[in-house]
Length: 171
View 1: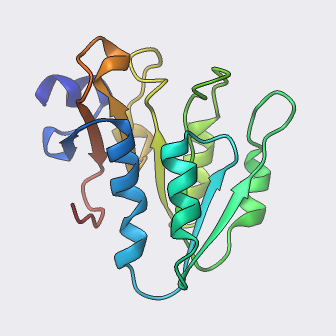
View 2 (view 1 turned 60 degrees about the horizontal axis):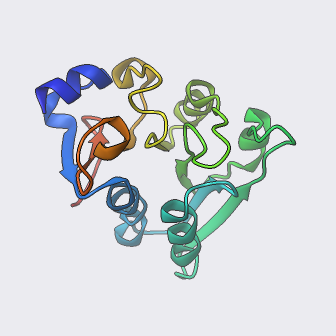
């Protein structure tokens, strides 16, 4: 826990062990089910199925709406399109750091900054990026991040969820 926290720029108490990236992604997204009032979730059309399909299932709940952002011909999200899709009910933005099929790197720091400016929780699926791209989660102020062991040289069936201190989270 200490070693992983240090490598991610996090505190050990902010690391929750899971069975992998999919469980970590689901744990964050399903927080919307227990939230009261209207909830709006933003993700993209290129997310891993553990995010995209879960978001689509959640959007069937009467108090949850979903916006799926598209990407340009290079596979990149336009930060301006994120800004345009935020509404007062937006409570979570979930966007991957690196695409699992194209390898395209998203401007996560810029996207998470937009979320912070609007006081919206930001989750990133870092499964493909972890161990390859240096992240300082404390500096970036990302709220939630998912990682899986087998992408960084560890065994399958182990992952972690980063939950920045101060964020409400029910396991």
